[in-house]
Length: 523
Image 1: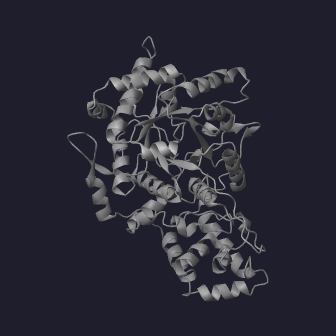
Image 2: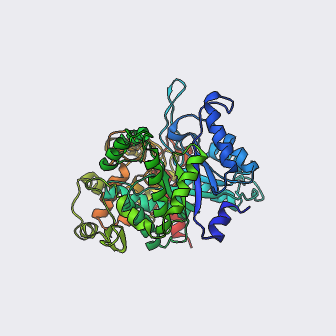
Image 3: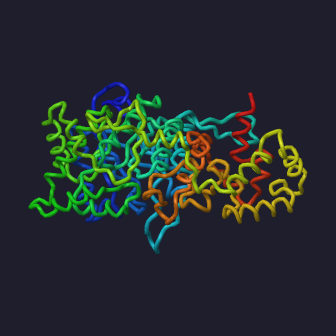
């Protein structure tokens, strides 16, 4: 049987994946019986190209996905294991990746992950040592043969290459421009870091869906397999989505009202929701997506029914469905102009409002005096060979403790950055990467390679403040540099530098910024 990578590469068939949500407890638990039975049925079901198994969905502790993946692997079926960064540091993620490779699980869906939920004794401490871009970078190094040579070794030690086929998630179902565009830019960084396929977030707006595939093609990523997320709703889940309790998932007023009306029907809307899912599958097929990813299903009968309904449609029916399934929110940002004939995106024409904003670049409150001062100071101090660069490097190199630099200098650094940015003294500073906003003090997930997908109308999913990546986008857009938002990625923070001087670490070539400067200046 073909692997998932081969199916995407060798065939233009429209593929079907199904999400299997894990459960808490062992496979012998009574409550797990339905999940295990569903997994066994899926392993034998024709018409399903792969099964995707979640990793502590919602940040809650659950049975590891490998425990449910065995029946699929043993049956010769393709399985995608979710691997997220919320519960492991980089060493734990590498260890987990070696286990997956050893057990024959090569297809991975790489995620930064939801903020940690409640476990034993209350809320768990999230990790987020690296993010999805960092994890994709690690997996790419493992696929190339990870170099584990020690500093004092006389010969190179390179491990055998792994054969991971990693994918990533992207969402443009966001309300504001400064949420949507950063998500699309981060998608490109995920592809650059090694993502081989993409699955979009749950959403119910065909125009947004058409914008996503239009963007990928416009930016030269049309060959990347793009899989459409189809969640089979029910009234209870719709209410949860409505409150945005699931990070990154939203339900518009019109769709919420429709779900409530169907909740009073004899079957609580089941027939309607299965047909709605089938229509979404048809839309993804018609738009040129490579497959559909079914979630919210719990029996093979429901999967079969969605597929049966979708097969009953004529080839052009999807165009009418696309006009029907347009559940956007008031004031929602659209990147492309609307095609009046289809109601979808015009891929060759940006939205007039977006074009106007690029031309006028209105002033924003995010462009503060502190930001301007920080930019100026940084250019004077950290431009190699210019300004204060040589003096700073000399002072730190000759200091009693080169990790801290001269005591007075470090005291000034820490005091100034604490007042201006809430500095946590991480020693590997990302301020210049994020328009002088601190990911340690102002991002619950310490995201250094772009925003996570969990913002709620521009606000952090954890804290009630504006996402720093939205603010950074606004600052750079004002200067005409918004497409450089993630020019620095990937950043993998060196935790060994915590508590040391980030100024000294840059001048002496120890942090990620210095490594980037070295790469850019050396032939």
